[in-house]
Length: 137
Image 1 (cartoon, rainbow, N blue to C red):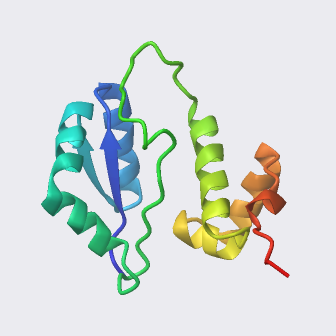
Image 2: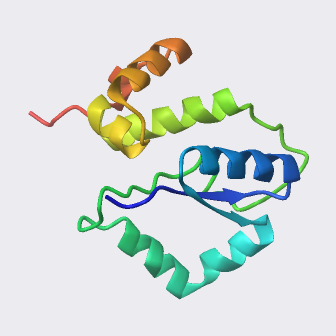
Image 3: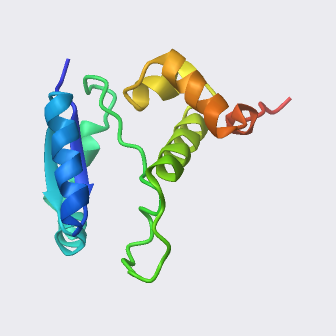
């Protein structure tokens, strides 16, 4: 099984420090990029193809889920900062949608236990039925 890696995109030293501490506690590697560096990396073809390889079916369980707001590459400091709970809730909703309401697969993608996911779904009041796509009759 591969080692967990966190990618942190931030200019905030406190966020970076907390992410590194979390990585050390969970024995995960942490890579830190400024928003500008991240933009340059996303524009780099070798980096993008490396991400695609990490997300391929042959990977050892690695999943790349879109981070909230990842499609908008506008780093406007005037936007409201989200709390960690809000970001966690959004990430859980994205994973549930990505896996069509399958909470076991969503938990695996988020690298958390199934029971933890169920508890957080209840804690945040997330409607899991919205993630299930209806099959055409």
